[in-house]
Image: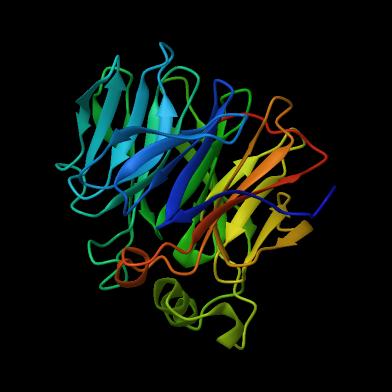
Length: 305
């Protein structure tokens, strides 16, 4: 595996939801309020504007693009140049919606911040399931900021990051797409110390200023050997974690790593979204965001794909 990082895109406010689809790399930029894609030549194209701020991305089986619209708690659908509401989630959560995984059948699972003010009064919250027809229900609750999420290639297991708990949590996916058998898949940091002052005030304190090696999951992706690459913004790295918590690889990043995705034609290119801050007070006014790539040995697997 090479740890050499190559710059793919810069001059971003804050990139999230990185995905590889149809030979292109896709991402949302929170504060440009738009979804973008990058072709193999490195050319960046704006796909669609999302006025209430985009985050998680995924595709229905017919290739329609699903986009989380964060501040109005909606799941949008972009099809044939038209943007419509696929599902209104506001009756299930009042909080800022965020990351998402969409499985091979078009079922979406969407997390949220547990707050509407970024780092104020954060509460345990839910994971929302949306059917391909747009019907929504709560799939799981009492989660500490459900964030990056993956589904195994057989479609029978989900692993998601609970950012404020510093852990990866797994569920069995039942035939009706409901979730059961919740387990801790990997604990990335010891607790309590009240979540290390609420994860350094939601990433507002630089990792090097912390006495602790605070590793928390933000965006994640899965490989063929069931290792999970975890972007850890508090420790400025992307690390590969196996079930039980063993860390097999760590890639230091020039700035905080907020999300990652395995892609490329062989799914061995690791895309890493980085930024200086996630706080809107800083990220919305500056363009410190960058996306890097590096090559890894084990290809990606499962969903997001």
